[in-house]
Length: 239
Image 1 (cartoon, rainbow, N blue to C red):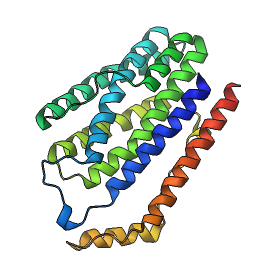
Image 2 (image 1 turned 135 degrees about the vertical axis):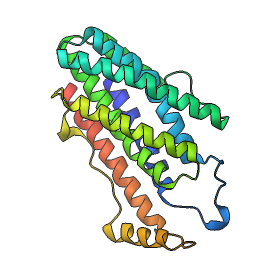
Image 3 (image 1 turned 90 degrees about the horizontal axis):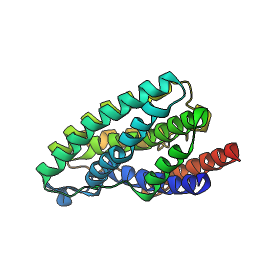
């Protein structure tokens, strides 16, 4: 179960990074969407925030009930309660936009819940913290990328709201003392000169940022490699 989940998590993360990178590169002026039009990155945020609530609410409730460590129980309850609030925000946003969002956890997320149901004591506490800290760490850069590029005011507001919740949840999970920082994937960033060029281009209206597709593929490859390394380490730790 853990081996399969780790591999699937790597694939999900690679896809999330790919969409985040696409969101960072504005479309040419002639193809710019209208303020109300949703693009793939916008939908990734809406779906990602919704999917997070669908499994992290029951995961938090489970932690509040069966966590061995009192801090884990407290954090679980707070995360569950706050995800109920965030879930309502994304549902409201989707209704305003007239778009459909998921209503059930993915097979991978259901697998995480099953894993937690089967674990007890410190094993449960570690599983809960590891799974949720990884999930929040993966969605965090996607939120920032969408916030930086979206033309839609509703999506922009949701990104602002989600950013606050996700940051707070990462911090709460870290207070348990169970986050294994050495197993977290490193941040994948383009070279400094490319970020500088991107900033200059954005400052000049109508100029497309000179970001080479090669750079984007390098960043994506680095993200995939990082996730693969983390998956191997996690599987070895559980072996």
